[in-house]
Image (cartoon, rainbow, N blue to C red; front, top):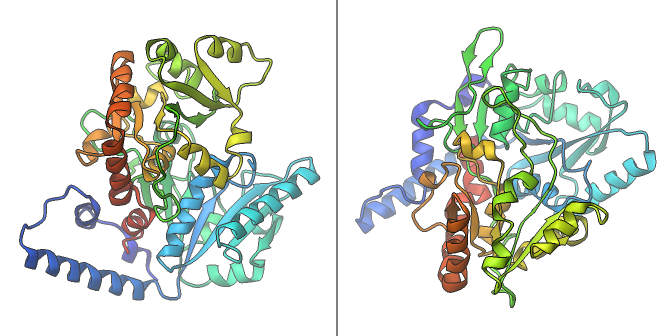
Length: 440
């Protein structure tokens, strides 16, 4: 099947955006609406025929290695469940580099298999256990767990597509896939490092990002090119995925808890104006640490990896923040969903570079909160213009706006909860975004 057949031209992008964006203008006529629905149904039926006999591979390299991270595992899980809802022949392709601890590796393998069984994906995966670990991904040095290497090769010999999350799958294995789609989940770091290193820009046919503002006039993201031609990459945008059949609205909690889940410290780096700013949550939250004293009726909690002996824990607790262990409260996807639902809303601060560069980034965690009917209070990255007017978000720029947003959630929670859920279904649903990416 020729690759050119799958190229996404500008007309297709605009058409996909129009049909999948909830606030796109449509005719007020009932007849016109019915005709439009019928035409979309026919179009999807035609595309479903096109995908018969084709394997859709979901390439990931960060779920199995971090078995305590329920939120981390939940990211590719939304994609896999969306592909399942589309009734496509999909295989989760998970790379697991070997470590020096074979017992720990075996525990990671068993945990990965257990989670897929739990979510109805048994038999729909191939875990690539790579020993020794290497940035070069060669099937000769990989043991296939799940589907056999023979079946994997057979599928690679037929029509196939790879959704390569965050450049998880590298050459030479990468080059065996027919249609290779780069799916960026962290635009500030990916775009920056693409200007410094080979990050897959030479090996993919299409490039998709959750940097919703990548084409905005105020976006300051670096401009990666394809070496050695210097051709600038053409980026398409999608929304962070959430399976709205798995994440369903939950009743309002009894406590006014605002929380988020993440890493307090962060070792990632990008250069901004000749400097490498601190990208950690520790730095990002600093302007907001006095919120508990300003709004004592609310409870502020952080599910962050902060050791018991770390002075940061005591400092945060003195200022009114409760610290919980994310491995304990959100160590698996089910626990992660339960923990998010225990809050009335998410409150979080994000990497300053996403704000400064106006990337339009929104987290997958925010999409999950919305699907549960939980409003989200987060910093403004330029994403708001790509959302419907009533979206469940409060985008903030300083502590005064944060205080107003928190009080607004307490006052208007039923309305904001409904708006959050509606936005998740209309905008962030995994099926809608996969249709857009796959042109299905």
